[in-house]
Image (cartoon, rainbow, N blue to C red; front, side, top):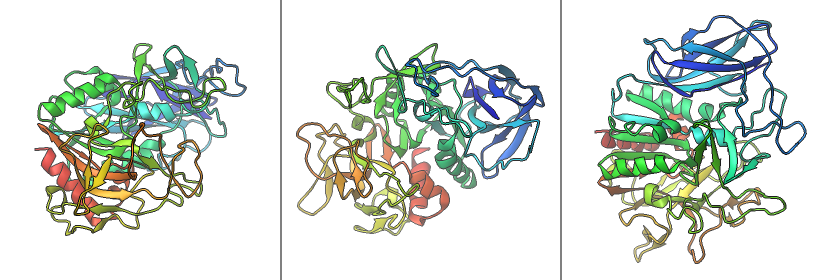
Length: 464
């Protein structure tokens, strides 16, 4: 068996990766493939001597569960990334010397592989910067292995420390998020001729100039965990005329605070504390007055508290409803070339909405048009271009019963139906939100010509 993780998830050409591996094979190698229309083999480490790494015990003494809160400190193997490698997103495949050494380079599910971003030495080849949602990935990473369920994450047997729940970014696991959202959408971008650079959440947090060479920032898939510095930089970028496209949802739901020299983070969420569940107030909720008190709507235009999620008991997307977005304002530039009319349904019959989705508080006017009320922090300029009512709704977020949209608790006095609301708002720069985690999946698979055209319209207009 072989497992591993990378001490750095972002490097530039000529930079050094530290690969941390545990294996019972006498030798192993790491093959590097660049994600694109075709996954290209870029290079390999060659054979390296293998050894087993220690699995840290859970500090609460939970049998057979590892700690998600510490650097696992597995044997480290430095690798200097060649200068000539093309910038992009790369997957490292861990290959043992004994047994079958064949693998499917296109299969990014399962274990024995990790992901990193190769940033350009000169940024801004194109004007689009794609941010990988790495903090969210680490929050959900259970550090499992083939045949071993360690169930250790922010959600499974979390470690409570001062200020919240702690997760280290230096531990093994899988890259299902890359397989489901990123790899298909990156391939679509490349096939469609878009020049895109990449960064991680940590890059956005750490580098004050990371956005300076770009016109458009992309958030893709599931983008739940943000630091205050990330958010401030993006808001300043928009205020200065930069544009953002949120092809994502459950976006900016929790605040995280980095620790351990930026290799771990802490967040106070609504998980159990002793016998108390949920533990409230959750001080790192962005929107809550007794939390951060800075509603995510003011950035994205939408919030998970007005949307919801769909459980998948029968597999992903399981029995999810497929209502699609009912179109409003078909003359808007977002809909150019789609042929959609007012009342047309975008993505009908496809799992476009969810599995998590966001919305703005809204009310219907005298013409039956849904308009954002702004009572939840959504900007006055937010225009609801498409709306998908979430029905039926079960209000208890923690009761994941099949057959219901499961939604977060709303602020006192909130009224009106819940809905996913695709839309756009402007504050010097322009912000588009698809308001659903699975927009990039439908776009990448070519399931709907109108989704494809809207995605192109957003990229083309906001990257110039």
